[in-house]
Length: 298
Image (cartoon, rainbow, N blue to C red; front, top):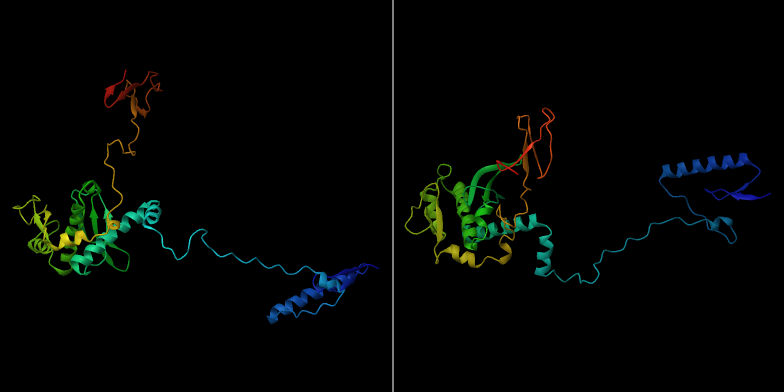
């Protein structure tokens, strides 16, 4: 008589007694259910020498996870500025708006004693260098203001022009919170006095002698004012790293390929496509005429 072992309890089962094997499977199943209900593990019996149950495969355990260690770098060494710049270039959105926010925070600390709340900073093709819009955004719990700058005006401009345009709108924000703003789009005397106190002289011509108030007002810098001193303390990492490419230049890769217009001589329709197409009208069976910028080709 050959012996077999139960895969659950390890008891020997006669090969010829199939009914006993069925009984053993049911018994072991009930034993596992009782152990699960009691929430306690089945006590293990000490295996004796020569016991066939000691040859059972041990329970599988997951391998230990290796610790995440960067090879070739000391964890205490900080990243260099060149490495941070390289990593930031792969993520232009947080790099650009991070510098934008840092520039706002710098002038808020240096010129306004950190009294201005955070606003939503944006870029927009506005008709001026920048703009301020009060209570422009909401999230269901409150409202916030918006300050935007025109990237076309900021390209290849001196740094003081970019900073002065930002402080210009920050003074509008200060007046919205602490002063009496005038009508929309108008620069009143209170705003002009605040600008002068910060070292920015307002003028509608951008030069000395111009009107200090009005709808379109520029500014120039007082060399002995607080703005010039704050400009000298701006870190290089706070300046906007990305500049918008002007449309229509050789570097502008967003221009679409020039398309040609094909027209039916009998006014049955028009088709736009690349140059050199041969098209036949389905109504009058005549050849389409190719045109480019209102002129016939060929």
